[in-house]
Image 1 (cartoon, rainbow, N blue to C red):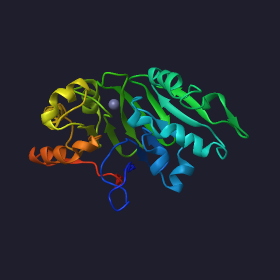
Image 2 (cartoon, rainbow, N blue to C red; image 1 turned 120 degrees about the horizontal axis):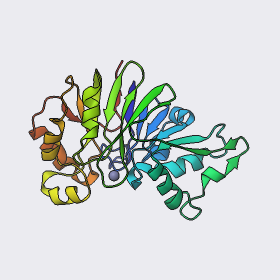
Image 3 (cartoon, rainbow, N blue to C red; image 1 turned 180 degrees about the horizontal axis):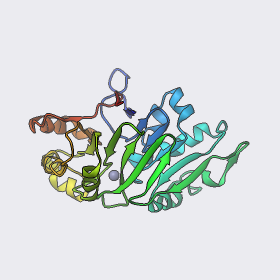
Length: 259
Ligand SMILES: [Zn+2]
């Protein structure tokens, strides 16, 4: 399994920046987990291959690129983009994004080949297939309907928490999995913004340390995702200060591979 957290902003030189504003992890170049930078940072091969988008939740930084991705591909799609998400998230997208005001209702439009957008509802606890991958949906704790996922390609398996504050089910399910190759867990804010982090249902490094102690499975790398761009340096320093050997921030743009 190959994953890549797509870039979402540019540095001073104009090259992709290591800071993460938007969330979109491309798996094996053909399935997107969240769609934050989907339209902006996918390469040509990914644009041609990605027809399945699995969403954790409907916050803007996780869906921003979805309408534009469908728009870019509208004429050339020979099969619809399938959005896999909870019923609540699908309803939120229909009401607030694909509503004919913010953007066209692509689910009701067709190109010469037929439908361009289909929604596929996902239930908490459900296992479902997306291309060659299996996803297991696990509820997390983020104030709005949010799912984490255990993702397997039949050989390698990873757990991705998405955005979440302290959570129970995600760790309970992860602990039952054998041979997890990596866990991706958020840490959006630095410790000094504890109050804001709690209000927004995100983790801080201090709370992340307590959170990852809930993992009792075989040791595996734990990667931090969804660090708020404005606080990247502070969060990075605080995570390094935890001195947890297998805990690192997932690098934007880098390809990680597990066989
Ligand atoms: Zn969120």
